[in-house]
Length: 117
Image 1 (cartoon, rainbow, N blue to C red):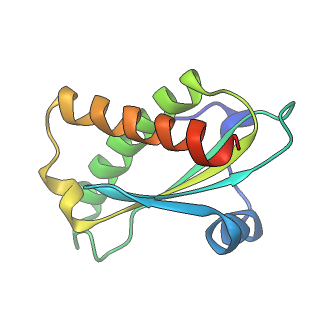
Image 2: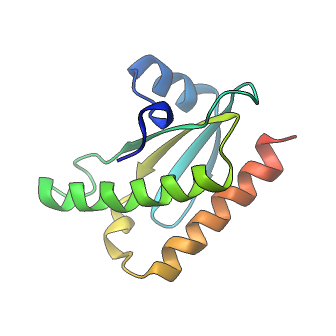
Image 3: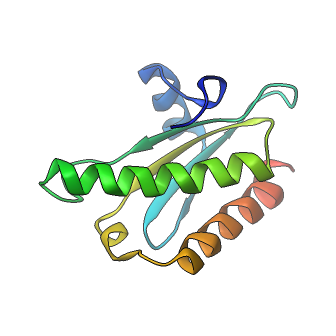
């Protein structure tokens, strides 16, 4: 689980990030990222809908994987943005740590290029 200061909880905050944030589509998820003041901690929310899989057990497994990715991203870039990760049905195929690291690298590069402008 993400630590409490790093959780994006309110539905209004999540909708704001989805509405005005910059988006990047990865193989297993779409990520929306929105700027915050640089002295604020980074926050994240993970969304795994029923279109990913009808079984709650499988959806929770995907959510745990995406939470791990979010934790690593926040560890590398700890300040100044909100992030919403939305799972795609392709996320069921990700099993290796190499794939997870490539996703972390893609998102942190996106943050450094697009968000930190």
